[in-house]
Image 1: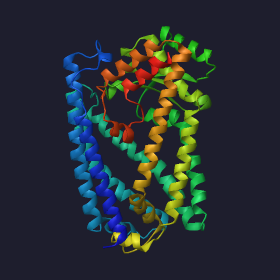
Image 2 (image 1 turned 90 degrees about the horizontal axis):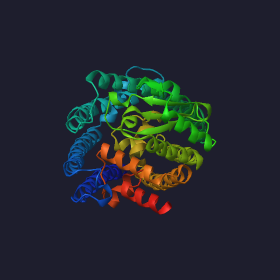
Image 3 (image 1 turned 180 degrees about the vertical axis):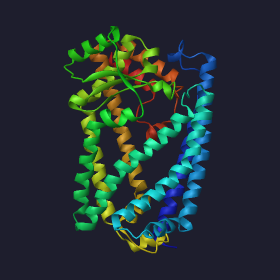
Image 4 (image 1 turned 180 degrees about the horizontal axis):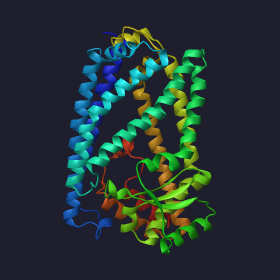
Length: 411
C-alpha cells in the first residue's frame, strides 16, 4: 500500500474514532443532579430538557460524522479526486481556472451532501427544542449567499496562491502568506459593513437606559466605538449572544435582539464589558498574530508537498498539479491542525477568564456578570458539566461553572 494512503486513512479513521469516543464520554458525564449554583434558574423539567438536547445533538453528530467519514473514504479509494480533476481539465483552461473548477467541484459536492444534515439540525432538532425561527426561504438564501462569499473571497485567495506558486520559486509560500494575511486584515475591517449585513439586519440601538449605560461605561474605559447595534438574530434562532466586530472606526458593539429581551441593563453591560476586556487585554491582536503564524506554517508545509508524486498516487491521481497539491495536503495537515487548534483553545479559555476578570474589576458588579452567564446557559440549554477531555479538545470558553468560580474568587 502507498505509504501516504496508509497515513491518510489512519488519520481519517483515527480522527473519527477520537471524536466518537470524546462525544460518548461527554454524554456519559452528564450529572442528573442540578448544580447548586443554578438553583432558581433551572427547574427540574428544563434541566432534563437541556440534557435531552445534548444527547440528541450528540447522537445526530455521530451519525452525520459516520456518514461523512464513510463517503470521504470511499471517494478517496475509488479515485474521486481524479474524476473531479479530469472534469476540470476537460474545459481546457489555464492552471488557475482549472484549479478553481477542481476546487469548486469538490466544495459543491461537500456542500450538497451537508445540506440535508444542516436542514435536519435546524428544522428537526432545533425546532423540537424551541430554538428554530429560520424559515425555509431564509435557510435557502443563506446557503446561496454563503456560496457567493466562498466563490468571491475563497476564489480570490485560492487564485492568488496558485499564481504565486506557479510564478515564483521556493519562496512562493512567503508571498502567499503575506497576501492571505493582508486579505484577512481587510476582511476584518470591512466585514461589519459589507459581509454581515448580507445575513442580518443591524439597527442602531435606540436611546434609553441601556444605550446610556453602555456609552457611559465605554467612556469610563476610554473605549471608542462607532456605534451600538441590535441584530435581528431572532429571525433564525431563539438563542442569544453579543459580540464586538471590526477595528478602529469600524468597531461596533452588536447585541442580539434575543439577548436584549432576556437580560437586565447591568447584565448586558457586564457582557459587553467582558467583550471590551478582550480588546483591552489585546486578545484580538494576539489572536490575529497567532492565526497569521498558523497560516504561514501551513503554507510552508504545503510548499514541501507541491506535485509530490507519492501523495498524488495515494489519491489515484493521473496528473500532478499545484491546485490539487493544496487540497490533497489538507489530509496530511489534519493532525498538525488539531494540535495547533488545541493550543489555541487553551489560550482562548485563558483569555475568557481574563476578560471576565476585566469586566468584574472595571464594572464592579460581579453578581450581574454571574447572573448574565447563568441566563445565557439556561436560554441556550448549555451543558453545565462537560467531560474534561471534551473541554480540552473543543471548548474555546471554560465551562460556565468554572467561570463563575473564577469570578467569585476575583471579586
